[in-house]
Image (cartoon, rainbow, N blue to C red; front, side, top):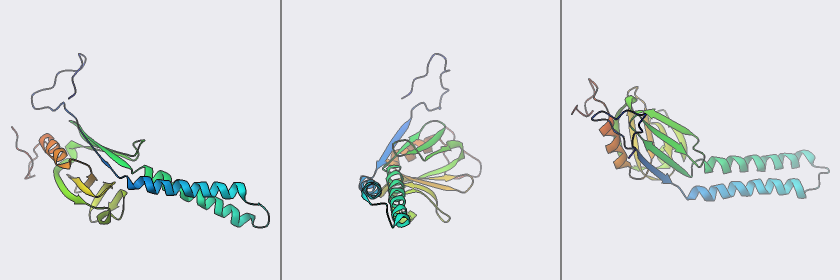
Length: 189
């Protein structure tokens, strides 16, 4: 629970000070990152140990290809080893990987509904990572399992895999403001 400082005015009744956080982790991504590191090592070894004589162009292409593939695999998988989700009084924020990129922030004023998804799979979204499918919306999928689905006022849908997604849904639903014409929104207290 967050406490307000003396410079920050106290919150009015009904405003939420607490912050919900959750994570999801995929340890398999570490194995894929290791394969990426091995590709980079192979490219470096080719560059150092090979004789740069008659086949310069093929050798150069092999070195660049191995290093590039290794970098893409290494950084692409490390970005989705885990996801951190944060819900505060104003927004849901999703940060991926160890440096928090890619990152997504959705203001709760744009959310018209939150649902628990008991089983989200990479197969549904075409793989792991930050995904978009025209018929399904946008998703951050780091592992198979439970997830959170947000329905936005502009018709978009956002899904994220996160542990204890049911708790996130309860928190978000508790913070949604009623809107005219949107059944299922919480009624004013």
